[in-house]
Length: 303
Image 1 (cartoon, rainbow, N blue to C red):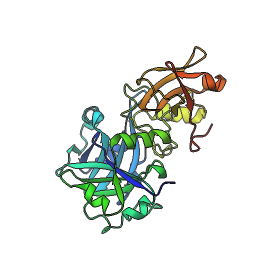
Image 2: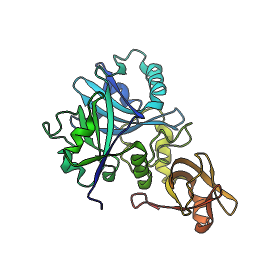
Image 3: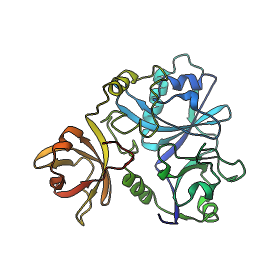
Image 4: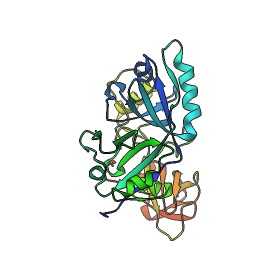
């Protein structure tokens, strides 16, 4: 493993706040994970579904005094707010932008927890280790994704991180790292094209099957009960010197369609693939358009 740690400001993420006495109960009926697990110093990874169980967006939720903070893809903010308005009814809950505008950064690479003073077992932040951040937490999805920081938008975070031996990187570098691990950001999955289990939410600690009812829960529970997925998001890589084609390009093998690309960064990408067809496919015949590719099945996703 490289001894380098990198950080990228995720300009494609936004931070919202949710307040009111009913905030936890309200979200409990809307998201895939158990809101009762939200505790100081930690972040909960979860998703928002349609009534038919399709994935709308993913979220990180963390407590902030008498409010909750939500780390969400900027492209999904409007749809998220629309869902909250739709289901609010008489709930005592408020939502909108944070009083102090916050930005999001991802930090990954060598010894991230130690560099940032985070406890990787509990995701807790030592209070005085990062006084310039609003929140810092180990990414609850996969250890290799590192940590996430929430900080005031006017802070020059690069300088603070450089003091801890962290090098500045681009969003593109972070996305390439994420795609290499096989992790989808729901900004990649536009149009409600898959179910949360197909996007590996269970493996990424984003769904709780014991929490009770929430919007989209019935179909999610049914898919878990059957214990067999038809499709799954998997990482792919071009085996040519040619970058992968555009998102939406069909993935085929000997003329049979396996699925489509849903995210691309240079030679790497993610594809939503039919598992039954993939099992029967000749591996060296898999193409995205005209570009030959390999399926890089990561160890954290069972076959």
